[in-house]
Amino acid sequence: MSAVPDRPVVVQPRLPWRALQWSVQGLRLWRRAPFTLLAMGLLQMLVEGAMQMIPWVGVTLSKLVVPLLTLGILLGLDELAQGRRLRWSCLLAGLRGPRLAAKLQLAALGGLAVFALQQAFVWALHGWAAVDAVWLGHAAAHRELMTRSFTRELILSGVLPSMLLLPAPCLLLFRGLAPWPAVLAGARMMIAAALPALLFGLLCAAMLTLLLSSAWGFALILVYVPWVTACTYAIWRDLDGAAAT
Image (tube, rainbow, N blue to C red; front, side, top):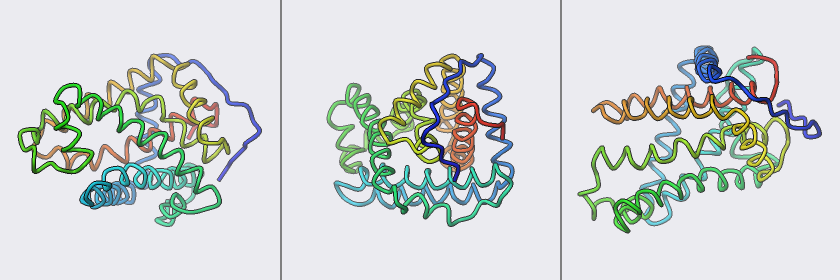
């Protein structure tokens, strides 16, 4: 891990076509360990699905645990970018360590905050039934909402807000920032790169819309998840002014 806690955050404006470069850089990084990253993405989805089956609190817990797994994958991607192997043990690194409390706080600030915005959006459209079906896990009581259209509304409403949070995990892991300063510094990075950040967010939204419109959409998201994680690392490296991966 290459934490440098005392170096000031570098905020560099980027031109719109950087969004395409981020996408390509993420793809190149993903291709260094494609099957391992696919398997890790599948594990994330299985863990999230299993936890959300826990009554009442399962969805909330999943929004804490899955971001911790993502932190571990980002640690593994940092090793991969430096020419080393992507190891399964990186997943455990996101769930333990001396900064576990900080990781949990960042998961709460990020995962739960975006989820709250998603819930607020579908609540505004569908009322309490949407909250009861998703957050409290009572989907069987609201089968009228269990449609592709509702799923797209729920997932897509979190895409653009999540763009502001993309650099925060890397700032915590590799720069040693505390959770809230990492969120603020990451948001400043993305705002300084507003055009490419917006374009990358729209690209992600378009891809998800296409995937969620297909009967095989959730299976294809298995490919989307590791690519986005790899792009997250690539975006941070670019905006932080670090050496190219």
